[in-house]
Amino acid sequence: MPAAAARGPLLHLRRNPAPRLAAARRSFSSSGMRCVSAAAAAGGGGRERRSSPAYGGLLLDAGGTLLQLARPVAQTYASLGRRYGMSKSEESIKEGFKRAFSAPWPKTLRYQGDGRPFWRVVVAEATECTNNDYFEEVYEYYAHGDAWHLPAGAYEALRDLKDAGVKLAVVSNFDTRLRKLLKDLHVSDMFDAIVVSSEVGHEKPAPEIFKIALDQIGVEASKAVHVGDDETADKAGANAIGLECWLWGQDVRTFSEIRDQILTKFPQ
Image 1: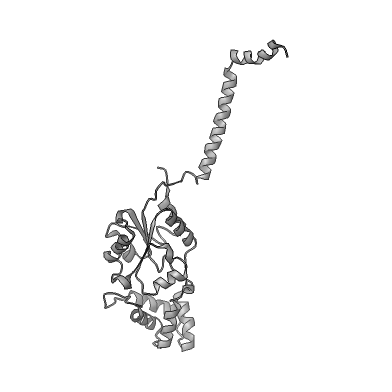
Image 2 (image 1 turned 120 degrees about the horizontal axis):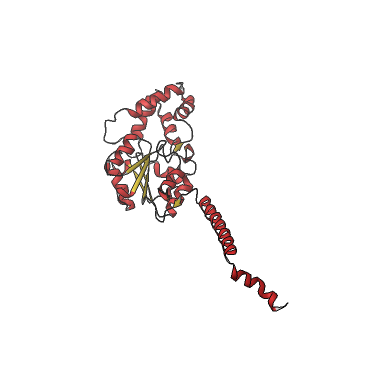
């Protein structure tokens, strides 16, 4: 190829570079915007994982929050009671259960040790059946993990939180059956602390039970959040010591939501 012909395109570019450079800039800009858009889509529409969690500790209520019944109480009481001649309707049992459970308890703690004295009163009031064998069958039914289940996604969310360094604790008004239930449901080892009212001598909303949990996980109240389903026992009790509380079923409805509020930040 003659030298002049080879130099031709180069000379043309040197003399008039603007159109080619402008085209290159347009191409780079378009490609860059596509990359930014793809990154935004991959990040969940603008949500970003925090470099550190929003809260250093998560406290969880057990019954009604972490532990959900496999079937309604009234249905269980009625089905187990048939062999003992108990014929009350499920609706009547439900009303009796609510009445017994909400009535003032004359002692300091409802749950002492295995909780049998309290639950004996509840079962008798709900069913009008005082047969001891019936009571024991009901009591033992709820001592096994197959009577309960975790909310959908709970195990995965707890694992993610633990992997992120969040300290986890159960804080529950419960009797001594709770530890076994957590083991049956394969979540006991997830928790850095399990604080049970019948063991520590305090029931929510008493501030002591929350403080014990925080001390055991080594997190200050201002850096933790509690999740429970009771306005008084959970929310009022936690707030009284400066601990934020999310009500299960109102403020949060899934464990993935709990996880995301702790680990995810939303740009202002």
